[in-house]
Length: 142
Image 1 (cartoon, rainbow, N blue to C red):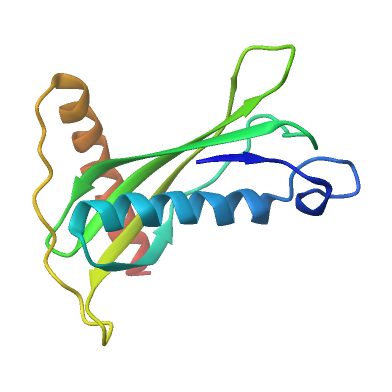
Image 2 (image 1 turned 30 degrees about the vertical axis):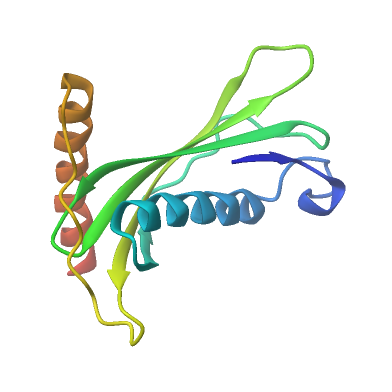
C-alpha cells in the first residue's frame, strides 16, 4: 500500500499519529491474510511496535505485508513501513508482526492453507515466526 501523510493523519508536531500508521498496518496485514486464505480474517494480535523514524506531513508512506508463518487457523504477517521523502533515500520507519485468524460468517475459525516455503530466507522468517508465536502464546497465558 502507498499512502500520502496528510495533515489529518498528523499530530501537532506535523508527524504521523501512531494510531493512523497502525491502522494502515492492520489493513495491509488483513489484505495479505485474506489473499492467502481466501476467507474473511480478523486481527488477533500485534507484537511490540517501535517507531524508528518520524513520518512528516507530505511524505509518502509505503506499507508492505508478507506472510511469515501459518498455523492451523492463524497466520503471522510481517508488515514493514517505509518513509519516502523527495530528497532522501527510503527509510525504514517500523516493522510490525500481526496475527490474523481465518473465520467463517459466524466468526468460527477456519483452517488455512499451508505456506509454501521455497528458499532459505523464507525458512529463516518462518523459524523466527515460530519463536515469536511461542512467546506470544506464553504472554497470552498470563
